[in-house]
Image (cartoon, rainbow, N blue to C red; front, top):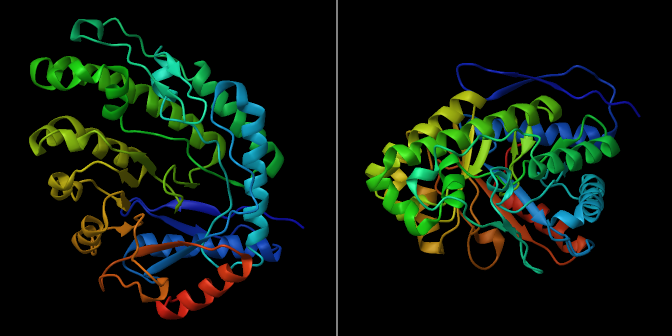
Length: 370
């Protein structure tokens, strides 16, 4: 079986990727994956069908995931490889829109750790960084690390080994990435960070700029090694190009501060990488109008209660694709979304048979156009 990965050419005017085939000889599984990628491209474009993408979760055959701790690298690689094998095999029996991918998962600590933050590793939870900066005067002396810093080089080691096993055509998932301001808020003690937004704004900007320098160097190398298309860090949607990140500190600031500190770096990152996907679990409805100013937004994920999430489906219906944790209550066949919206339907199944029945019924009930 031979397979040559499709090539991509990012359209400069839209930031979305157009497809051109570089080989015709493919196995059925690879053809299925290529078709799924093509559907994601159309879905994210907002001007073309399909209006819905479907992910049916069935992971009962997977062992528990090892914690992303520094002493669990081999176990993390083996678990991620097993996940990929099961996802790849599922393409042949489950007709949803999942794209098999290699998953170098982490906690939120990786970039803060590169700057020198200590990392706490709870036994049954993801690691997290302890703050290094406590006052504005410390920022100037903080050096921008290289991407060879241990927390980042370990990620490249994991990804390289997974790619070695899977081959160059396998899609990589991004590690857990936050915005530069969010990473700055991990490095700087929050007890003084929020006050510094008012009292020492230039020091905050300086720290965020240093973080952005490291983040973009890391991403440039990541995309050079593993390709520009990827599965998002969270949730797991396919992106033909661009960047995805978490933006979780903005619930604690007002819209003026969002425009001053957060929005410019999001615009810069979207422009640099040709597309943008965002996860936000903050209570940040007051920032929704400004989100529409981020260029080339491809997908939005909010983690909020159902009433808030239902409003998000309507507010962003004609602006960007959406993939929220709440899709509806009760029978998934009854779930409906605003007419103009492009929404990812995500639900779980307890068996293979149930997963197949859900796919068949949801394709019909949501009138999915292939």
